[in-house]
Image (tube, rainbow, N blue to C red; front, side, top):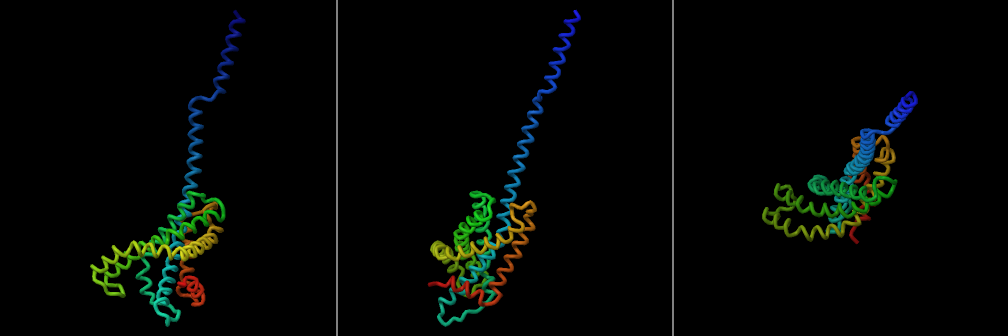
Length: 256
């Protein structure tokens, strides 16, 4: 009898020990939940940094589109008048035509950087920026070319255009002239777009070196503000700085 009770007690103790050491169903479920949360946080952080990189590049995309538009206007004036001497144009007229490059440059850079980060990610020092520059050189001229006729139509309707057209003539020119204008502007603007894209990513690389999307201290608002300051400085130098600096850019954009 004593032996029976002893064996039963040993078996019961063994079962209790095995039961206490085996993980329960809830512990298994908890481990999966924790693992899924870790993976979600990791991918969410990557998505946040990708979005931040795309948003931070918008100001420099706008700046490059404004510079290209500014240069193209002066090139067009020079091409129309062989007696033209390089100088600063009427800045009010430049501002009137700034809606198209502001919207087109910003949206073009946003699309370009979103495509680049989705294809090659944000890792690497050069590859994401190289792909961004290549995409921007296509999207920026296309979008600006698409928006510029609408910008001109808006000026005609509001009476701010330097050329007097009736609303009907302006509407007709907008509707029927846009497809050919977009095609021509895009094809002739790829070279300028490539220059703008390279310039944008060089400035972005300098900013991202100190506060890039791969940095542990990356903050979307802070890096966007820093990029905006750099974009404003570059635009100011080209539009209001020494004429010799702009002349180099003008010579590159001239129609051969």
